[in-house]
Length: 276
Image 1 (cartoon, rainbow, N blue to C red):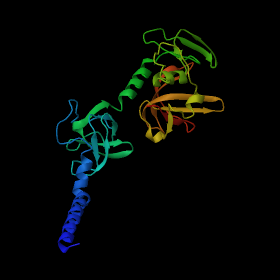
Image 2 (cartoon, rainbow, N blue to C red):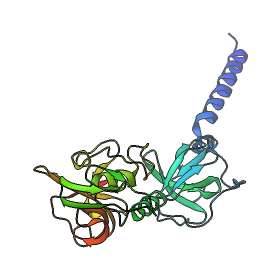
Image 3 (cartoon, helix red, strand yellow):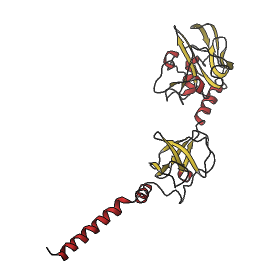
Image 4 (cartoon, rainbow, N blue to C red):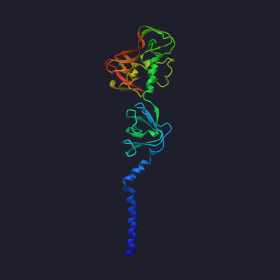
């Protein structure tokens, strides 16, 4: 083989090596290709894009494939790309920084542009609904083994010592029947005027797919406190106050008291549970 032909082959190999080097050498090139998996955050926005503060912990839905970044702005690295329609949880206290929201998605916390986020629900709406439903049951009678009330209707009456008590009327609830209505558990238990009693304090005392134990230090409105011990039990809906001290609560307390809103304490036999 001639020196001239060898030189030609050498040039061809050098050209191939140059192409390979250009394809895998630049860190900038690699980053740009990753960024293309998500929408260009600097261009356009959805009709319902959010720009102001939202309730801390709100659900935010992506309107395009959206990058979750390690900081505020496109200069920060991409942690992952959230698909269009994904639901992320606000994780930064509610207010944006330069139009970016701190959110958690799939266990990863980072920053996402509000231009491609819609507010789905606030974290308090379901809890507020539960509190409103609890208020509507106040003043009704205690009715062992039942759960029904219809605002504006006769509240009924209870006499004696439960469970050997006597009830008159079509409406009233015991502690667990009341809580099940307020929490809408099971999901078919929606109508407060229809009598139902799907769970007892024995049920609420153990974790299920519908409620789990939480610390009494972490109580939020519409959580509950429950105990069941030695054949006795009680459950009430927490509204506010010190989880280890005085608390405002909604409860169907007993035959004499009926369903009341009151300030109370709870012994250490109670533990807190959360549905919402």
